[in-house]
Length: 251
Image (cartoon, rainbow, N blue to C red):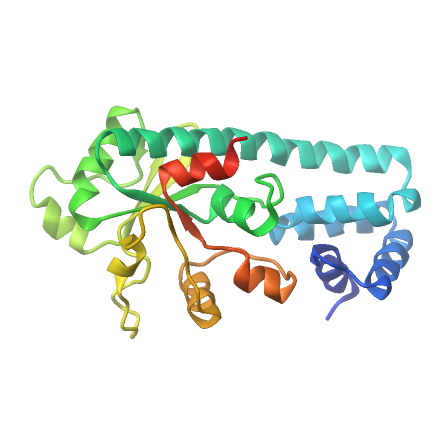
């Protein structure tokens, strides 16, 4: 493992040891401006820049000049602003679906950030993922189109059921990108998947077994970072409804 990757892992730990903190301080001191820029680019590529920034602030801010800290802060604030805007849009869309009688579950994105870290600004994400029931596909997409979202593919006006049967997700763009899912696992996967299990609870859908949680995270392509194992396996549910989302994120 390269020193930069080890540095990122140590920064992402929820409870770094004294040895981890010493490695963070030592590594940040050894970086010149070009290497620091490369490290920041790597952190962005892995979607963990906010965690790196906060770890540097907590453990090694005295090892960097003020102008470098200001640049890192500017990059982090850009993520904070985008995440807040996208979270507000997610809450609005979830409420819009709820008002139309469409059951929906938000996952990944700000939902996972809040569940995993307790802070919607500590995870980078570029779109909003929402799971709906298969019978609500056409209604949900029509509602978003009415809200001025534009589908990324042309949807035929006839034979919709046949068309949607070939897909499991569709993306729509406006100020944010939304992905509407009606299956979390492709039919091409040799897995006996019980999709209806996600809808059995009215408030939040809890995944109680660590093995099940890891499988769901892997199959739905979560971008996750190394964390304390107990926090990761036991501290996140992964899916929330509109009401629960508002209560989870809003004060």
